[in-house]
Every structure is written in C-alpha cells, then in structure tokens.
Length: 64
Image 1 (cartoon, one colour):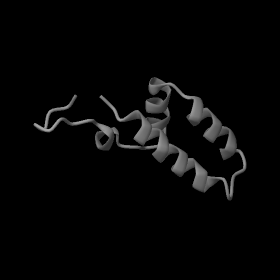
Image 2 (cartoon, helix red, strand yellow):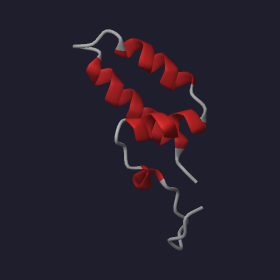
Image 3 (cartoon, one colour):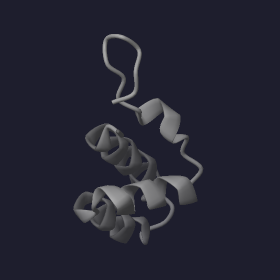
Image 4 (cartoon, one colour):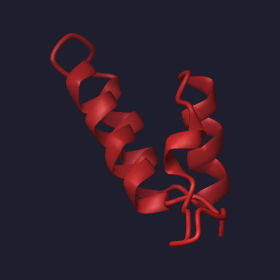
C-alpha cells in the first residue's frame, strides 16, 4: 500500500518548484490535486520518483 497523500504532497512540491520557470506547471498541479491513486503513481513513475519511500510499513516491518 502506498501513502497516497505523502506522494501527492511531494508531487505538488516537485511541480510547484517548476512553476517559476514553466507556467504550464500550474496545469500539472491541478491534475495532481485531482488525480486518483493510480494516476498519481503513473505521474510519479513518469517523473522518476521511487515509490519505495511511499510504502506503508506496519510496526513489524511488513508492507501493508
């Protein structure tokens, strides 16, 4: 299971920094804010994000 809200937040930060040089990034931010879990994962992969850091792990070290 992926921590979708952390991934969404990190993607917003990632694309938000691009807004200074690329106004088109504003459209990307809107897309990210409305994206489903599957869409977020696709966007993250397309932008080189490692999804391993978003895995939710229980207190026994198992992926949930």
